Amino acid sequence: AEAPLAPELRNEPAGVRRWAAEFEALRNRSDAFLEAKGERPTIGLIPVGPLSRHNIRTGFTTNLLASGGIAVSNPGEVVPGTPEFEAAAATDIVVICGTDQEYAATGESVVEKLREAGVKQILLAGAPTSFENAQHSPDGYLTMKIDAASTLSTLLDGLGA
Image 1 (cartoon, rainbow, N blue to C red):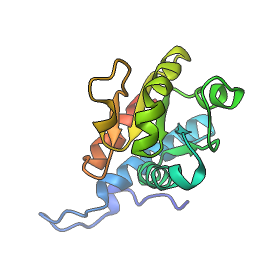
Image 2 (image 1 turned 180 degrees about the vertical axis):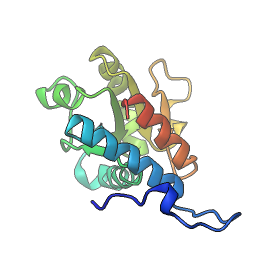
Image 3 (image 1 turned 180 degrees about the horizontal axis):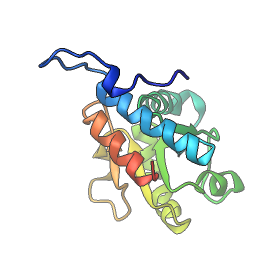
């Protein structure tokens, strides 16, 4: 990737705000992490249910995280208790991706298994409706209503970038 232009070389009119500036700053943090560690900050996806059902939310999550310079590890559909699930749960931050119906059926047990595996932060792609009054619920939710730049910055902080 091309190196960003040094701030002192930029000529930006006073009072003008570029919409992409926050996201460029996030990607610059990711680039610095890549330079220091040899890999991008990465979040694991926990796709539940078949591809035809989880693909919408895995795609949304992948694109949202990429806009902030965060890579994803997508193992494909995983089932708690399998070696694939354990490998997918090996990252500090994960995002569960599936349908509302899948969340209602298995979401709470997936969250419980992820906590048992030692995952530090569990997010859910979608609204919290499936987890109302749940004993085991995610730490946060990724939806189209979030402040994306702020959320991505917080995630980069959690990943050490």
